[in-house]
Image 1 (cartoon, rainbow, N blue to C red):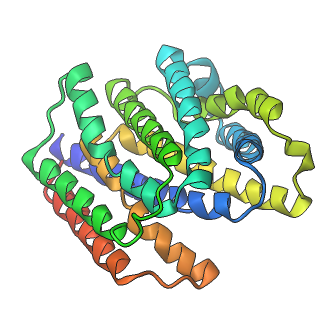
Image 2 (tube, rainbow, N blue to C red):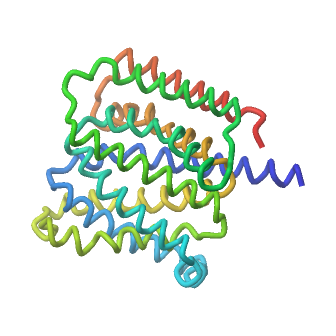
Amino acid sequence: MRLEARSAYVVGVVLLVTAAVAYSTAGLFTKGVEAGAWEVIFWRGLFAAALTTLWTLNGGTFRRNFFAMGASGWAVGLVGALGTAAFIPAFKLTSIANVSLIYAVAPLVAALLAWLAIGERISPRSSAGCVGALAGVAIIVSGSLGDISLQGDLLALGMTVAMASIMVIYRKYPETPGAGPAVLQSLFLLPVAALFGSPLAVAPVEVAILAAFGLFFAIASVALAEGAKRVPSGQTALLSALETPLAPVFAFILFAEIPSGATFLGGAVVLLAVLLSIRNET
């Protein structure tokens, strides 16, 4: 049983790292197009829902994902929709670094919610890792705190609470499927985005970019959901914080943006905190 638990834990860590890599591109996609937040939400959600549904059909898991997700699946869909409605506008209103910094609070939020909801206590190692991750992202944004949009930061905080809540739901109800609720959260937002935005006015080239965004989101959503079932809530949020140092790396690869010394140092601190927190955990 211990070997099986170790194997499940390792698989969970790999899935969560995959989700973090995919999620780390969100700011690049959002800020890389001229389309507004609601337009981005519409097209990303449409393609993400379609691709995820096709994935379940191809894998023969459609019925389990969409007809057996239960109340917990609907809850994930609703909370996820609220998080997405805050997540995309946050990138439009404040910097990627600030969104990443605020999201780094997720380990603390998830640990608190898990303790209140399911009585799961966070280990001393994970607690230390949370502190280290917060210190790392604080270093990353230390040179860019002079121009912060309060509205964007508050939206990012709302997204953080939503994501932490989803992690705890999956930890409490591990039988909840990942794909169905991910599609559901996109479907919840499509009519709202169409009402408040103008998705049909988006240029075709930007629709193609947002289609890729939808693909990355589909991969990230499924990987996060499946990984969160196998890893304690606090560590799930902590591993997700890997996107903080990864985002500047992708910005350099795609846009030749050279990260600052603070970004390199803070990213190293975050990575070290994550590695130390998962060592010898089962």
